[in-house]
Length: 102
Image 1 (cartoon, rainbow, N blue to C red):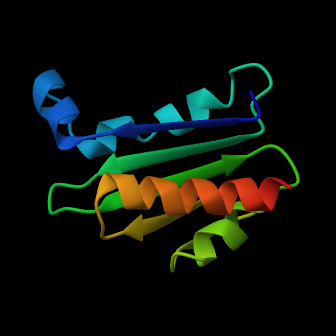
Image 2: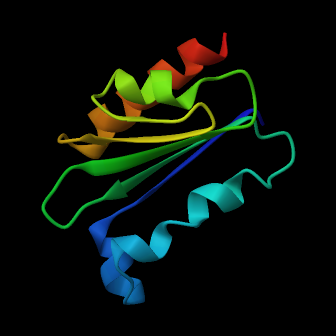
Protein backbone atom coordinates (compact mmCIF):
# COMPACT_ATOMS: atom_id res chain seq x y z
CA UNK A 1 0.00 0.00 0.00
CA UNK A 2 2.92 2.42 0.34
CA UNK A 3 4.00 2.37 -3.33
CA UNK A 4 1.63 2.46 -6.27
CA UNK A 5 2.83 2.18 -9.85
CA UNK A 6 1.22 2.04 -13.25
CA UNK A 7 2.10 2.23 -16.91
CA UNK A 8 0.34 3.21 -20.10
CA UNK A 9 1.38 1.79 -23.47
CA UNK A 10 0.90 3.15 -26.96
CA UNK A 11 -1.72 0.39 -27.40
CA UNK A 12 -3.67 1.86 -24.46
CA UNK A 13 -3.69 5.25 -26.18
CA UNK A 14 -4.67 3.76 -29.55
CA UNK A 15 -7.57 1.81 -28.03
CA UNK A 16 -8.90 4.82 -26.13
CA UNK A 17 -8.22 7.52 -28.72
CA UNK A 18 -6.14 9.39 -26.14
CA UNK A 19 -2.66 10.88 -26.43
CA UNK A 20 0.12 10.77 -23.80
CA UNK A 21 -0.61 14.32 -22.60
CA UNK A 22 -4.13 13.18 -21.65
CA UNK A 23 -2.59 11.05 -18.90
CA UNK A 24 -0.80 13.82 -17.02
CA UNK A 25 -3.26 14.04 -14.10
CA UNK A 26 -3.45 10.28 -13.49
CA UNK A 27 -0.24 10.27 -11.44
CA UNK A 28 -1.71 12.86 -9.06
CA UNK A 29 -4.93 10.85 -8.70
CA UNK A 30 -3.01 7.78 -7.58
CA UNK A 31 -1.91 9.62 -4.44
CA UNK A 32 -5.55 9.67 -3.31
CA UNK A 33 -5.43 5.88 -2.81
CA UNK A 34 -5.33 5.32 0.95
CA UNK A 35 -1.90 4.59 2.38
CA UNK A 36 -0.01 5.64 -0.75
CA UNK A 37 3.26 7.39 0.01
CA UNK A 38 4.92 7.24 -3.42
CA UNK A 39 3.41 6.96 -6.90
CA UNK A 40 5.25 6.13 -10.11
CA UNK A 41 3.82 6.18 -13.62
CA UNK A 42 5.53 5.15 -16.84
CA UNK A 43 3.99 6.44 -20.07
CA UNK A 44 5.21 4.99 -23.36
CA UNK A 45 6.06 7.75 -25.80
CA UNK A 46 5.19 7.69 -29.52
CA UNK A 47 8.88 7.67 -30.49
CA UNK A 48 9.74 4.95 -27.98
CA UNK A 49 10.93 4.96 -24.42
CA UNK A 50 9.03 5.95 -21.30
CA UNK A 51 8.31 9.22 -19.60
CA UNK A 52 8.41 8.48 -15.88
CA UNK A 53 6.57 10.58 -13.31
CA UNK A 54 7.28 10.39 -9.59
CA UNK A 55 5.07 11.78 -6.81
CA UNK A 56 5.63 11.57 -3.06
CA UNK A 57 3.88 12.58 0.10
CA UNK A 58 6.52 11.04 2.32
CA UNK A 59 10.20 11.52 3.08
CA UNK A 60 11.11 10.16 -0.38
CA UNK A 61 12.75 12.89 -2.47
CA UNK A 62 11.39 12.45 -5.99
CA UNK A 63 14.00 14.77 -7.49
CA UNK A 64 16.82 12.60 -6.10
CA UNK A 65 15.25 9.45 -7.56
CA UNK A 66 14.62 11.13 -10.94
CA UNK A 67 18.21 12.43 -11.00
CA UNK A 68 19.43 8.82 -11.08
CA UNK A 69 17.88 8.66 -14.56
CA UNK A 70 18.96 12.09 -15.80
CA UNK A 71 15.69 13.72 -14.77
CA UNK A 72 14.76 16.28 -12.18
CA UNK A 73 12.04 18.23 -10.49
CA UNK A 74 11.08 18.85 -6.90
CA UNK A 75 11.00 16.82 -3.69
CA UNK A 76 7.28 15.96 -4.09
CA UNK A 77 7.11 15.76 -7.90
CA UNK A 78 9.71 14.90 -10.52
CA UNK A 79 10.17 13.19 -13.85
CA UNK A 80 12.64 11.46 -16.11
CA UNK A 81 12.84 9.68 -19.47
CA UNK A 82 14.13 6.16 -20.01
CA UNK A 83 14.88 5.04 -23.58
CA UNK A 84 14.49 1.32 -22.96
CA UNK A 85 11.84 -1.41 -22.96
CA UNK A 86 9.13 -1.44 -20.30
CA UNK A 87 10.46 -4.41 -18.32
CA UNK A 88 13.91 -2.94 -17.73
CA UNK A 89 12.65 0.63 -17.25
CA UNK A 90 10.07 -0.52 -14.72
CA UNK A 91 12.58 -2.69 -12.84
CA UNK A 92 15.19 0.09 -12.59
CA UNK A 93 12.68 2.74 -11.54
CA UNK A 94 10.94 0.60 -8.94
CA UNK A 95 14.26 -0.62 -7.51
CA UNK A 96 15.37 3.02 -7.12
CA UNK A 97 12.10 4.05 -5.47
CA UNK A 98 12.11 1.08 -3.10
CA UNK A 99 15.70 1.88 -2.09
CA UNK A 100 14.69 5.49 -1.39
CA UNK A 101 11.78 4.30 0.75
CA UNK A 102 14.01 2.33 3.14
